[in-house]
Amino acid sequence: MMRKILVFDSGVGGFSIVNSLENANFAINIDYVADTEFFPYGDKSDLDLLVRIPKIVKLAVEKSQADAVIIACNTASTIALFAIREVLKIPIIGVVPAIKPAAILSKTKTIGLLATPRTIGSAYTDQLIEDFAQNIRVIRYGAPLLARAAESFILGQGLDEIAIKQSIDGLFDHENGHEIDVIVLACTHYPLVGAQLAKLAPKKVQWIDSGDAIAKRAANLLNLGTGKIVKGRAFSSGGEDAKFCEAAIKFGFGNIEKLRVEI
Ligand code: DGL
Image 1: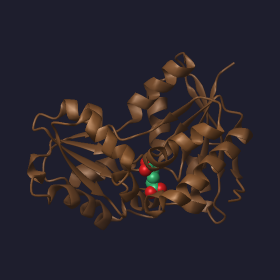
Image 2 (image 1 turned 90 degrees about the vertical axis):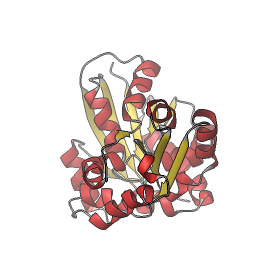
Image 3 (image 1 turned 60 degrees about the horizontal axis):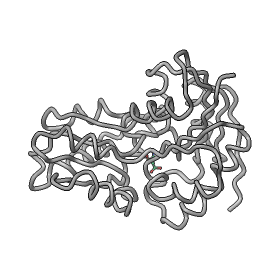
Image 4 (image 1 turned 120 degrees about the vertical axis):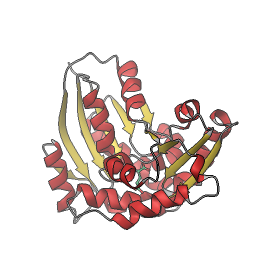
């Protein structure tokens, strides 16, 4: 029987991870859970996220009966991965900033790190930089509006070009910004507006996200064969999120169910 993975994010950001699984041609069932009621995570407190995320992931796993979970959200992973692991016994794959491959790739030894303010300020990110980018200049920018811009874009509500421009400027306006040759998209929402970001960048750089590495990790962990992914159910915590349901159906999920999260 085909294994099932539950992909979790605050909104549609996990779609970029589902795209990577799809492009890798693995045979796998995918369910999806979005905490739309609490979106965006990037401006919430660590404590609120720590209390909420393990509960919602556990609830969704019970409903989905998945064999494994991908926490397709850098913010959730860097803040709450250990707490999620405490409440679930199935394999959990966290999506965290792709600092290691970016550091290896950079010729100028200067990388840009674009993430939510929570991810940028997390101890987990500090540790990744310490472990994998010691001799690298890491220019960080916590983009206050970019996840929201990507979410609205996918929900068909237009593109907030100011948020895109602000994010690019946040990196390149730094005194050493002109040295950046690799940019890490450390929020799963950002690849969904990757082309728009690249268009506004003042020079050609390499863009790195965690999607392909996560697809490989999932394949190894669950011993996946080649084939097609099958998108199944989607869960959302939001009350008024008809737009999310529309986008999830358009993306290929079937049944969208409301999750009642009690905190
Ligand atoms: N997609 C999420 C991430 O990777 C978070 C976006 C948000 O809710 O702020 O960080």
